[in-house]
Image (cartoon, rainbow, N blue to C red; front, top):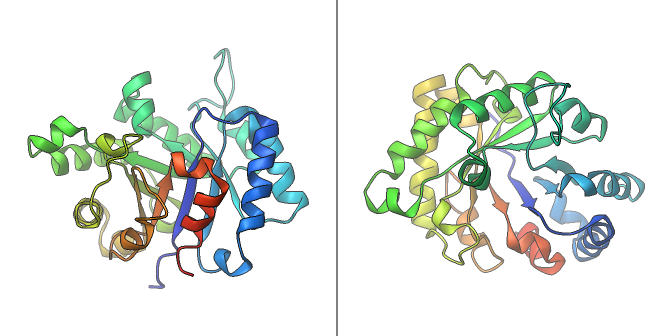
Length: 257
């Protein structure tokens, strides 16, 4: 099986209006070199209100970056005030959609069942889910990290089509390292990403486990990206705060220089 294609995704969360989004993408493109895109995928996940603006500039400037959304609803249409459906995202040329980010789980009560329904909806329309799993500090200190993460993985992927392993990404994001400045060591991140891959192997077999990409997310910065990407089971990064700086995100994307 061919080597897994690394994937670096920037999750802007609830930052940047559509004008600021355009400026950020333009500055990012300025800082990146053509070779930075080779052999890896670069994904931008702006807020919903900025998707159209970012789509336009990616297309007009022919920038080799993919568009991602931060969440979705599991129904295609209906009386669901405030929700955004996958078909709406599809019309904006969105390629990737986050499902089950820890902030969605913690702040908005998304369960594994909710994440599972969203993941199924994303797949149903031919988009690619980035399914997020991760433990809290209390769970890690209690020695429950692997148990919690693998349980989330099983619940979130129950009944999901994994026949094309490259069409689904798992993002391991320790909750205690998101937006806190604390980062799992490369060894810690590798241990948990390896546990994710081992669970995939148990659930779906060797080919799926070998082919599916596992990202690490949690205070990823220019200073730690190389060490993280050097680990055997880490195939990319889900970047939060650092993706709001064109200079920092360019350094992360261009970590192979």
